[in-house]
Image (cartoon, rainbow, N blue to C red; front, top):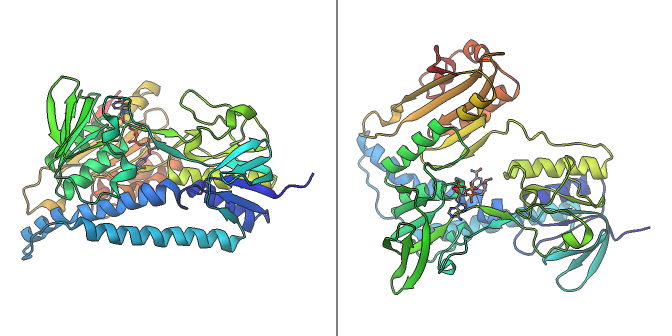
Length: 452
Ligand code: NDP
């Protein structure tokens, strides 16, 4: 049987674009792709990239305070959101055009429309056109999920934050995960009176407990008001913003509420269930380790599968998919020991187990130190740096590395190589310190602070 395409990819985010390009350029496949919004997906258009640019923007005020302490005659004026937004939009337009060009140059045929599955080998576009494909890849990502409370429609999510006409003076962020904590730091840095309400006892659940405390204290020290064990019960629109009621029954006024309460797999109404593709309780597409669904011609990668929801992981899954489905070389992605960064202020870089998870697994030694970073020597800054290694007592391997510090994302990429290679504490110690740096502490911590 002949098909219109060897591969049809639904979703033009990081994972889908990479799979389509590699399939066309390296595997010589005839590839079609549909994207209903903008090429680049969450990461490029409404996630990592614009977020990181906002992180950069938000660090100038404290940098100028620091500069003044070093003798510079400077002070931060006010932040001009409209001019930042124009530059941001121009940069995103540029990146999207790069993505389009890469796809075109690889020979991928693109359709700027929503696509659904009409059969195991049939894709239907929103305008009614249908294409057959030997293999279909679902790479539709995720979407913010918002609790169903009264007035929830008056809140925004991270999708909308980049498009505001003006920055609010006072914002409430609900949630305590990556997005909530990152945007709390950003908006606080841009001069917004920032309040974060989290339903649990400490933000960033799932990460190392000590790191979470240092981050939360650092966020508070920089000006974010964090209230834990507090949730949003009701939002009422008023003339000059919103009036919100929390779960304790107290009423507060804000200009804006942003929900950052998690993301759900974007699998609704794609036609998957009717074909026999399994979806779990959260709507994630069920796949095996080769990203293949229960229907052999249909694969899925990235956030829609809710495995490890990070851009570089989706890209790896896309490349492994091409090896498996188009090159006949069954390849799975190793989802263990993935380093990642949370761009909070202070920043967090992490790989491997938290102290709590490691303790539950085996006997460990904990090496940790907190200190004031040298660059704040001239200013009264209470922020602390944390350098922490979790070491197996049995084989001395470093099971986890946790860094809370400016630049932690850059540091953990490097430390991650050693941890992934199975380095022991003694391997770390054999490396000479780079002085004076913050990360030198990772190779100079002599005695454990705790054993368990
Ligand atoms: P997370 O899952 O990280 O956090 C969701 C937060 O919302 C948690 O604190 C959760 O609380 C809380 N929450 C969930 N439901 C409710 C509710 N009904 N009422 C109140 N609070 C609620 O999701 P994010 O949206 O922050 O991020 C989504 C994903 O995007 C991340 O998991 C990550 O994979 C990715 N991401 C990665 C980034 C990076 O690599 N730097 C940056 C941004 C996003 P609880 O802890 O109690 O469950």
